[in-house]
Image 1 (tube, rainbow, N blue to C red):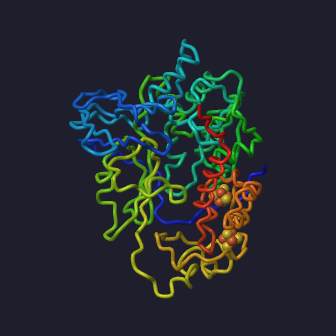
Image 2: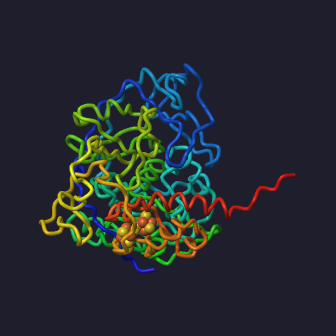
Image 3: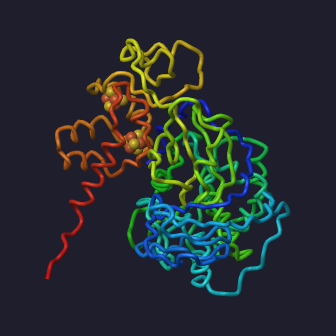
Length: 459
Ligand code: SF4
Ligand code: SF4
């Protein structure tokens, strides 16, 4: 497949490259579930004093990956439903954001690749890896067909790859060496954006001579940074026996942290953005950081919707969630639209940037759109404009799949490439008829998977 499609969504409130250090918290509320994990097996007791990096719970269905304590504190199991709360959290001096500037490479550890993989699991670094095709956590003791390392994050309001990499180039290149040491001979692909910049040149310079590393240069358009799209572009096969592993800059730095310094990864760089956020920034935040404290002073006067993740693929933050999730890489805040707009249904393009040529916004010079949760009029039938097909990075025809699903024809939707959809949400964003295509496809993919799963044999 050729890389095609993609679109840079012009939205207001994207955080700049600055990384803010948050004040140390007194209490942490660690949610017992995240996007992929359910930490249902408790490993800490009520009232127990835990140390930083100590295991609080595990996900028994995902290779027992741990939920780690980011700081020393006293465990409270029932303070907040579905969370582990840490009280009397010990403040620690802030680690410098730039732990290394000089390119000093640690000697290869003498232990086996298996032991090092185990160490990655126990120190929370393995959780950054994904199967590129399924999004699942790879088996720590499995053998991949190839590994993708991506430096490109393009979804609005998630932490950018270049921000994560800034001043941490030595850790990044060390991480690449560590990664290679876990493999036998499988290729490692490094995904870089196709732009010339001083920083990009430094990255390329640092990696010159890494003969085992295969660069994959991609256009900087949202959707083309998706692991599955990249794997297909490089013509990697999807096989359960030889999966393609993928990780991003944060993941590679976590690998370096675990294998160079034996330190756990409990702090991430997240983006705090969205049109309703005051002063959008990147911030270093640990899992469990109280959301009310994180968002204090940043929310607008009126009602706002907080989304866990980016605006195109995130989900509304449940009201019951009190702390930052273990996998969160960004929070998006949209102004909640509460009033009806006069003739709103007629104005899909006047004060918003429209992808479609039929709306007047294209007559204005390009501008960043102040996006809100307003739907502006009801959904309409597909008008066959083809905008969704133009932007789709998976090179499928979303309008055709929508047509089949609208008729409950799941089999035909599958034959039209439903399984190839990477759930990027661009089709929903550009659709002038406001059809929630992504949501429809995600639901249909679940249904399709359930139908094709072998039926359980009852004794
Ligand atoms: S069909 Fe899927 S991959 Fe294509 S644009 Fe829509 S959500 Fe993205
Ligand atoms: S963008 Fe919307 S209206 Fe246009 S073809 Fe796709 S589904 Fe139909």
